[in-house]
Amino acid sequence: MSSAFESPSACDANAGPYPDDALVEQVADALARDGYGVFASALPGSLLDALLCNFHSLDSSEFHRAGVGRDHAFRIDRSVRSDRICWLTGVQSAPAAYLAWAERLRAGLNRALFLGLFHYEAHYACYAPGDFYRRHLDAFSGGPSRILSTVVYLNRHWREADGGELLLYRTADDLAPVRVCPRFGTLVVFLSERFEHEVTMAHSLRYSIAGWF
Image 1: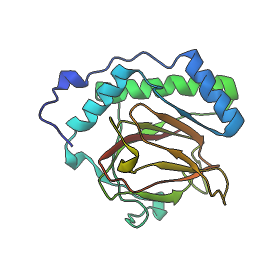
Image 2 (image 1 turned 180 degrees about the horizontal axis):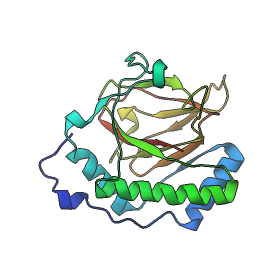
Image 3 (image 1 turned 60 degrees about the vertical axis):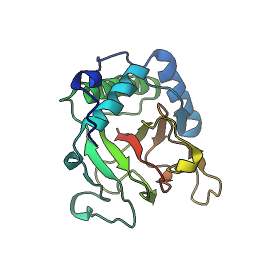
Image 4 (image 1 turned 30 degrees about the horizontal axis):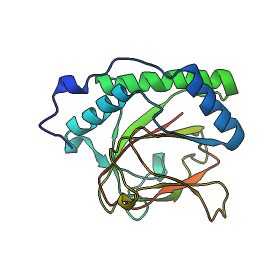
């Protein structure tokens, strides 16, 4: 993933700005009304730039094949998903700034909706041409589960022909799911236990940050 033209300083990001009250209110209203929301340009441009720079600066060895399930049920199954992921930590400034941004969003949504959101985890995801993720739920059965899912896209100049859409199914037999083109800066938020979703086959390199409360 690394690119020689990106210097470490170009990937730096400050801790702010945080999500403002207007965005938190928009997300809360969408969740209360529909259970999901799609928001263009939700994150500060400087933070998005730093995250994409950080993504490109990572060595390919830091990414590994994504699996499905958890604990004893965890497995690698490329017929279900074929992307590679790298978990975010607070060590580097750009991921740390994003995690701080997500923490402020968590606090705001808890105040507005009393969701009881606690720990947030997130990873970079890279879909090479031909990669996909079949229809699934983010919430695990049994034990502590995910409540709220988030996705942020880091793809500049993405076209519909590039594929890689997120399909969000509102019902089990939804024949016209919500289709989200993974354009740069778009934020998607949805209830983890309610919405099955999938990523259609990408035809270009596709970058995102998936996260869960």
